[in-house]
Image (cartoon, rainbow, N blue to C red; front, side, top):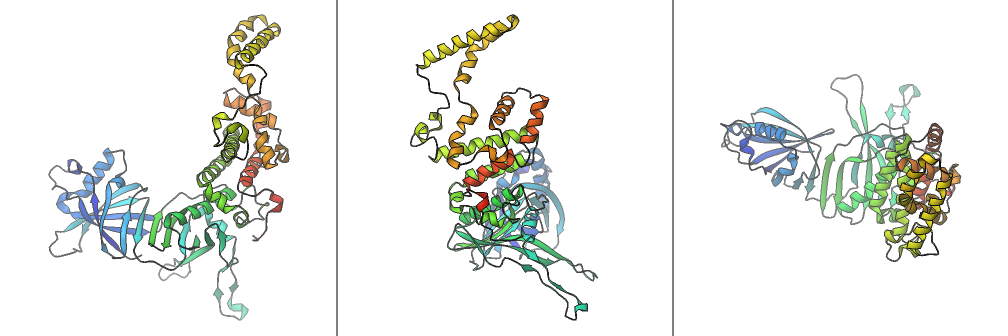
Length: 483
């Protein structure tokens, strides 16, 4: 990328109180340069030596909790003119490094300049020119294996009596349709060979190519984010893009934002259901439905993957909560419990109590009488404690069991916990004890471990997620792509 120079305004009005007391006052508008390197983005700010801007910024950074980038404002482009704007919103400052003198003066009228380097988590640049090429989204290392599985590398060596050649072959040449875009997974290959080295080094970088018709930058981002989320669901790790070159009818945009990567072998618990290739997940979901429920889908995948990285009670409770939220979503979409929830659905109206033949007052009274009668079979030294808790037990007795609450969900999706060898009454029992802070005994702990095995509760919750995504039966998944 060619050098980008621009004027930057630092909106910190009291900046002069930091650093050296005898320094000149800051002009607050400075010539700056964007520096983009592999996995690193920086802003180089040039300033007159006597202003000590680098020291002042470092001192401010040490004494303030808020992020400095919030106070950076793009003023105008110096070069290249095709740059329309530079945006720091949503990015953070990673560090400050003072540089030495900058010997190359920009004009004879300017004093000798120094510079400070602001290391950032990313940057966003908008261009005026429209590029008629697919948009490129550079995936983090977690997505590497997902792209690599579609490649083969034919090699001709000299002893084959043919000229040496090494040519990567992407087994999937066509673009894949997803809602309003078409995409293709590819590697970007580039040479990293050192000068006069006897070894040739070629680097591979996973990326997503995107074609579209007339979509805005925001719409393209949302489509790609959903595809990455589906990859994340398949692999149970965060697949995302750290950089992008987005081409739209209104201009081109570049963004780099380094994100944490986790090495992965490329498969999760649904490896065999999708025939060892996550693209079979992508082509089988209801893409338009996912996009219509964008926030819910992303949040569900995020929490499911988080649970899959945990163990014990934490894993169990998060998976249970995911199941609860799926039920809530179906209620809000008027698929279940419509009679109780009303139209439009109101979750507060979804009654989870048994229906009684008497009024609430008489029902509560009769329950208290029945509980009082139970004291006859309680040991004498505990009877009074039981009587004191009767009033707190009434509401719990009126509630349906958790299994009954989920009955409408299981009926609607035509799914039973037994398909994953689950006793849902035991699931409910464990959930209630953990939720109310009661310790579980050794036998229940062993039961919790069995339930939390990947082929039981995690798989069942995953199946319920996939049903919401539009995959009703995993046995009928269309196999379009091989490993």
